[in-house]
Structures are given as structure tokens and as C-alpha cells.
Image 1 (cartoon, rainbow, N blue to C red):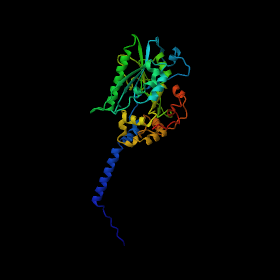
Image 2: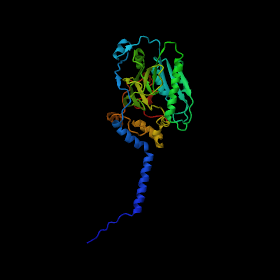
Image 3: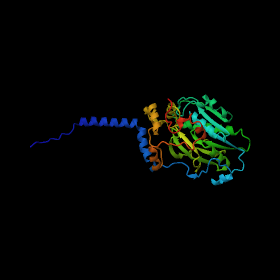
Image 4: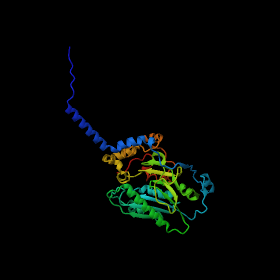
Length: 366
């Protein structure tokens, strides 16, 4: 009868295997930190986190040709302002590189805005040098020159202990001071209705007319149709940080929750809606969330970025930032839209020039 002998593996083999396994695990974690963190955090976010978005949603009534009058204000639960003549409307944005969206924005709002305020730097929030896109292309906006209030903010490399969020806060403080300086030149008794939003968060013209005509209170947020890369990839009504304020001595330029009141379907948010691949790379490296790259330089590969845009996937390879599982799963695999109805009029009138922003136009310039 045969005898089977079981031998224990030599201890040095086990040690070597353990060291190799541990080293490989450390390497994978170190080089995929953001992916692992994102997967764990975002996949469970609906369980442990709550959105800070305003909760008091105001039904928005509008159809083409509707007049902004006492009846319209009453539909929204507001009263008509007694005096709209002495109200100045100011649209205030921080400029990065979005020349096309700025053109669309200014043409959308020209009939209702008194002053377009722009703060621009020659460095990103992360301290990287960049072109002053508006200053170098100012002639492009000559028809709005009499309304534009421009301020150049010199940039610099991040100082020791300074974060991109610190630079962003300083930039917003600069806009607060520019707003105050502009308003100081208005006649006594003038009220200022200030729209605070990122450049890619565009209020609809009729929204501005409504809020100028009706007394909505001190401040209100704007719920925007949220798009990614173009108006082909629709994320839902998840954009809320844009807001409108009747300016007072406590006001400051902000991009955070200021009230629980929010007006539904008030415009468009087109995030990462750039014409060229280099603009995507600059945005990924230069904005306050640039640490999402996490050392993964392959994320900046132009071919990968182009493929990501045409597939409607997250540019950092991250899971959706959602606060409910309904929203989470709806954004995991987006379907491209086949409609361009209800978009800014200037965009449609110039569809040939802005093809990259419309359904079917995912190819970007290199």
C-alpha cells in the first residue's frame, strides 16, 4: 500500500510570497488611491451623506411670448415689484477658458443684463500658468463692450500650505470687491440684482426677466438642466449652485447654499463643454478638484479624453456623485440625447459654429 507524505512549504517561500503580495497591494493602493476612495465613498454616499441643495422648489411657469407682469408673478407666489426701473442687473463670472460658452451666455442675457462682470487670472487655481483667454480675445465681444466690467487678477504658484481652494476663495473675494466698486457708481436708490454662477451655469433670459419683475425675496437659487461635455449628455436637474441676489451690505460673491428657495428649470449647466482637447487637460490640471488625477497621468491622454467624451463617461473615471441610488444608477450609463429643443437661441442660430455642443458633435479639435 502506497504511503502519501504531506510536506509543509518552506518558511522562506512563504515569507517571500508574503512580501511580494504585500508590496503589490501597497503599489496598487498607492497608484489607484482616488479610484478606490471614489468607489467606496461614492457607491455608499446615498447611505451616509445628504445633499446641501435647497429644498423649497418653486414651480416655474413659462411659455414663449409670456409677459412678465403681475399675473406671472402671482403664478409663482410672488408680488410684482413696484419699481423695476431702478434695478440694475449684474451677471458676475470667473473666467477660465470658456470663450464659446461666454459668447452664448452674453447673447442669451444681453437684453436683460446691465453689466457683465468678469474676473480673469493668468494662472489656474492650482497655480499653473494659463492664457488670459478673455483679454486676448476681447474683440470677439465688442458688441457688449459698453456693458463689460473686466478685472485682471495676477496669478502665482501655490505658496507653502496654500490649497487651490484658498486661491478660489481669494478670486471670489476679488469679484465681491469688483461688484461693490461697480455698484458705487450707480445713482442713489438703485437696487442691484446680482446673478452669481460659474461661467458654464447659464440662466435663461426669461428667468432673469422674471426675477427682475417679481419680488422673490433676498436671494434664490436656480435649478439648471445639467449637461456634461455638450448638450448631448444630460445628467438631470442636479445643478443648483447658481443664484440670484438683491445685494445688501451682507452680500458677497458665493457659490454655496444661501437660501432654501430654488426656482425650477431656470437655465442650463454645461460642464466640461470645451471645443478643444487642450482645454480639457488644462481644466483637469487647474481647477480646485485637480487632485482627482491622483498621479494617474494616463487620464490626460488626448485619445482617452476624446473616447470618454464620445461615450459620455466620467473624465476622471469616477462613479457619479449622487445622493440617491435612483440618481446614481441613472448616471452610470448615459444615453445620448437626440433633441436640441429648449436650448439657448443663440446656440441654435449658430449651430454650424457650435456643432461640438450639440447632439452628434462629440469630436473635439486637437
